Image (cartoon, rainbow over all chains, first blue to last red; front, side, top):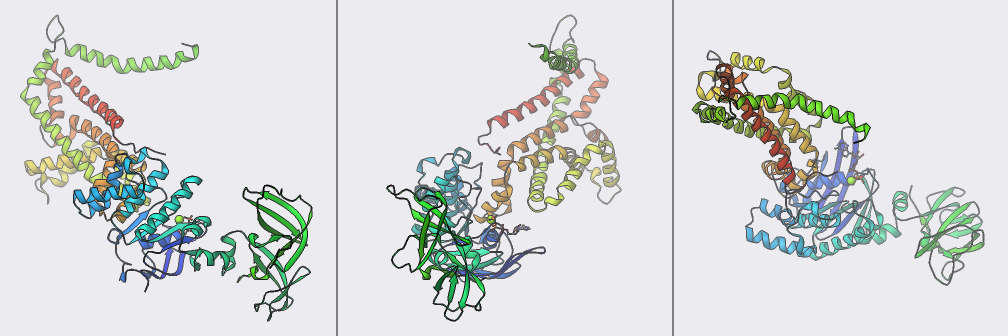
Length: 352
Length: 262
Ligand SMILES: Nc1ncnc2c1ncn2[C@@H]1O[C@H](COP(=O)(O)OP(=O)(O)OP(=O)(O)O)[C@@H](O)[C@H]1O
Ligand SMILES: [Mg+2]
């Protein structure tokens, strides 16, 4: 059994069924992100783990112990909130020491631990400040230290970075990951930012309408999305219409170009299906290993800095592709005829 | 001063005169006890009167107890209503406003009827019972001010998140209220407390009808039996009330941490 075991969890608010049969095992020391659109139930699951909401049914076990009916203040769970929720009347030191004081530790022990925590978050000189004297990023670091100081069994973070601006968001997420690995603490991180989830997680749970659509490593989630929702939510995606020629061998036709998927298809011959394609798997021009070639015209060019996103019109469809910026090669002109090539292995067949 | 400013200033001056003239008259009168010269004679007599010291001391004590009771009653109530039963807020607010609507004389007659010596709970029969009754009565009178200021204070902090943060760190309700909530609404509690103090110090109806020798009845008795001293007493009472208001301002300004955001 996993260290943190969420077992067939359900939650309804009145008639609203918010979490539907959510099951997940998290190993000790693992960093798991809940990724999903607004309102899909991420926070609700997290709050049930923390003990702030009571599940309608299902169980939560931590280290083999059933905590489903344990009140929040006895679960030994560290929580970091989007709005920091530091105690405004306490200094940084007292905020960090709060949990230890509640646990009845001695003054000296608390002082030592608080010092350690201040080192860990890189703010050793700010112990005497009040929260309102700190920047947002500093406040969230203090909130993290406060959650970690009593050595919780599990750390929960609910969109801890979404109130911060972009630069700090990136540096703080890396810091959170570093601290998590340093302490080896089991962590759930809620976000609706896919880049955040992909960059720091051991595993990602993509949630959709109260269900875990797919659980996997960032690599798996991105490259082998198991449902259409996951594929569309994580990263950008081209959807390409294809006509099935022979289902058993996976032969289809995209426009006039025949493609063999080497996978049996659920659809019947003559039916039209959608195939998905990541922009970065499409190459401009013919490339070795890419044996499917389409010709079309440049429809749009978006210069994004290091990456250039080009949209190419092929027959009635438009395919986006990404190329790296090269200073000596300006992007192609709109309307110019081009060839694009892909590998048939990169075409994803999505379940509905 | 431009022409446009004249009217507002005129209003301020008129309002100020309306308010200050009687006060000035009262101060002036209170200092004329000695024929032909200004003196603090009336004040000296009032302050030296053992009756004054006794009733004033009693009322101060009662006011402090009322404040403590009010805090114990109002802070947890306002907090839990906001946190768990926000739907009840209008109802609670209405209830706390009732003491402003129901005249004190009605309330105290109700008390006397319910708690008289031939009732099940004969509170008026003993010294302690009467004082308790007065204390509860004053806590009721102070409710509108206490509840409003505490509720306003609670609005300026995110009590739901603070509560959850404290809970996840292991704290129980008593600690959350005492260490997290109360200090953060302290300024509001204080302003409620000073208003309570001002009400209790001068209250007459409850005390008189329950036959308690507090500062209110003493002032009334003075007013009926002396000439210059009542004015001196009124000025003293005024000074006390204004000192309370001043203290509210002072404490608000010098609170170490600012909870006011948003
Ligand atoms: N206390 C509540 N009472 C009623 N409905 C609620 C309550 N809490 C959440 N909900 C509903 O449950 C659904 C899921 O909410 P939840 O907060 O878990 O979403 P989320 O995935 O965290 O979204 P976001 O990314 O916006 O934070 C929403 O439709 C929300 O309106
Ligand atoms: Mg949420």
